[in-house]
Amino acid sequence: MIVEERNYTLKPGKAGEFMALYQQRGLEIQTRILGNLIGYFLSEIGELNVAMHMWGYDSLEERTRRRSLLMQEKEWRDYVAAVTPLIDRMSNRILVPTAFSPIR
Image (cartoon, rainbow, N blue to C red; front, side):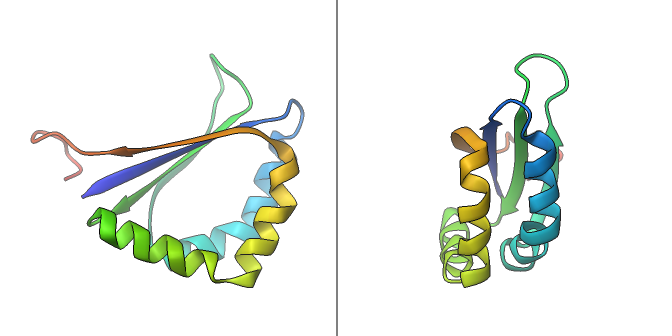
């Protein structure tokens, strides 16, 4: 298994709007197509205004396939266009579990 960690640093004061749009327009389609949502979080201490979510995949190939399917959906592209103005920075990482990780 691999885990993709995606981080969005949001413009100050926009976290509530970002999360509401995600819950209304993004969550269902992303969960349906990507499948394995490990968690979705907002920062509370440290760097603020950061939304972070993690998705599990069997392989990089599966991730590529599922993300390609996601980008083919007009509903998803419309959602992305709506939230992009709320985002200041984006980053993502692919995490590979260690041999002793509970998630493998």
